Image (tube, rainbow, N blue to C red):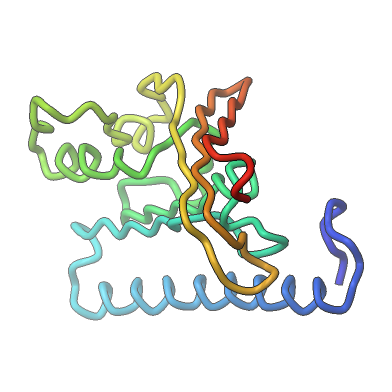
Length: 173
């Protein structure tokens, strides 16, 4: 097994990375089961399945960081015969964009107070809606060495070219 370049080659790291790769395989298998169930029920034509992780990789304290390892989360939206398989994008996306996306996919307009962006146009024809930045935060995290321990009131603003991270309580970490 080849570890990513930024990971130390230690037995504990190899175990963590192996567990991570196994979880990715299981995620793919789970999606396969969902797809099969939709096909068996004859509803795959109209079903949009959405999976989005809630934080970054558990590896090397990635879950609690506001750097890429913690903020780049998986997002998968298979939609039979509507989306091209293997579609990939580097556009900025926020979890709150899912509400407007689901509404527009159902033919509804997002509510007036919703400030988030529907991803539907980007999904269908690759046209990004123009999100300029994404906000993220860190709070309380606890657990093993592979997670961030302690009280952390950090905030970040992420754009395509820059990332600003502010720690409101730097002495508490």
